[in-house]
Image (cartoon, rainbow over all chains, first blue to last red; front, side, top):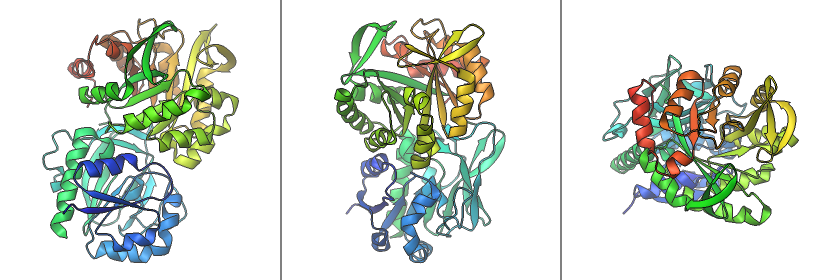
Length: 200
Length: 250
């Protein structure tokens, strides 16, 4: 039976490409608008669209329960803003995040912001197995700033190394967009699906 | 490090990719979803669609083509042409675009840039600027380069950055369609003044021109149409050429 992925629709931005990418990798995807439905999920993907506050708005009533679900081992993937909401707070907004990751979200520093385009993710994690080219697509002005040891991948931007890939319990977080990262992204998502199946 | 992007541009009219010589004698060169998928295979970093008719009658045709193309692509897709409001932008994003570019509407009503950035995030708001040299500076032109605005292009670029643009698609009216190379002075002037990525556009006739714009300006990306459409070279060949000369590409 295929992995059943629950995709959260916060009501901002299109989820077309992430949905199609996951299906392409063999998952059965259900998009949910009521965040209560996340609590029954087998595997959750938090997509990377919108701004911090808007994204958290709908998740807020179930914040504690979702964090508990993730802490106790439900496989999940947060992409871009969907990763940033795993932190407790963000400089981009005033709404608290899910607080699964210890630390906060801070503005990215550099001459050119947003960090937009393809950049290398240096990681030895199993989700990178078989990924031939470690260039992934980025489009962000903020970044995760963990205060615990959850960083599993880094990216150099304008001479500074920034953490861009995280894992805590069975929740992965990526600053990059695998669903926009052509072949490398597909290989990554196939690995994530295999991982999720292995921990169920 | 961040790689320089190569972006094939598809000018779309009535659902077909067209290419004209100096805006005349438009001719069909292909079907957008197929061409876009082929460019992704060649190594394109993104795809840009410009609806060059952008009339109300063709809007739904365009959105259908955007959906069909987005359904085949696993790289970002930017859509522009005739975006006049936040609703137009939402329609394009819902159809599957990752970024949307605004041009004339932003000049008419600059607030549209901040409204779109607030609604969808600045990373999906591209402001397209058509610049043309007038005396000792560059002026912004709108409506496909037909209307002078009197606005200084470099100042306008700084202003749209402040308003919330995530990126600037900068086309030189002086070099566009001529295939003699990008407008290096204009591109350098804008890229030096803003702190958001600048996509150079207009004038690409061969892979050497792409090298020139990356080696001589701060452009983050180069947009090109005819060299790819007419199979003068592939995206892969451009990248190999750049890589051999020390430009970091994917």
